[in-house]
Image (cartoon, rainbow, N blue to C red; front, side, top):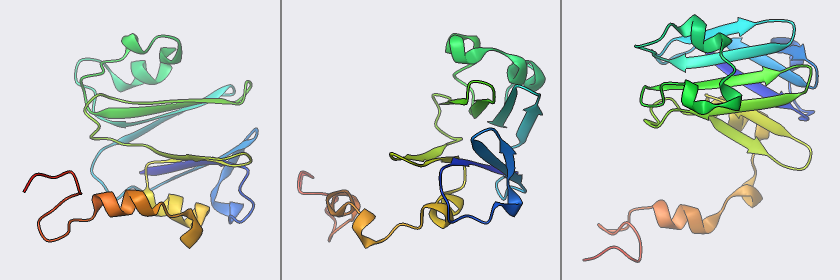
Amino acid sequence: MSFCIYSGFSNINDSEFNEYGDYKIKIKNRVTPSPLHVLKSESSVTISIGEFFDIDVDDVLRMNWQNDINMLPLNEAFCIVKVNISSQKIHFLSSKSGIEHLLYYNDDKNFLLTDNFWEAIKIIKPSYEHLNAQNIHETQPIKGRLSSITMW
């Protein structure tokens, strides 16, 4: 399973998304092997991706972890998202391992949170002006050099 949460974008085919207040959420089949778990209630939607070994995933989904992240087993491989429908707030967290990742985008009018890079690209529709040339330059290997500060 995979998920995408957004608010504000106007160029999206909304038929795949369910509306929760100002947020629209899509949950679909996921290509990667990590399990996705969802708990929906009248006041919130909680999504977790990854594995929990010392605690039941249903207990994690019901926790009020956004007030105390130390409740979660942070050394395991997971990410978790809670959309509070009544307060229109989103809390999201990735464990220390970083194996399960979240991608987000935010500007003055739009918000996007997903675990799928290509879903983000389809929604944001970045143009050449959105590229940060310095970041691209620093990450491109050039004849064995990774950047201008790499030792020879």
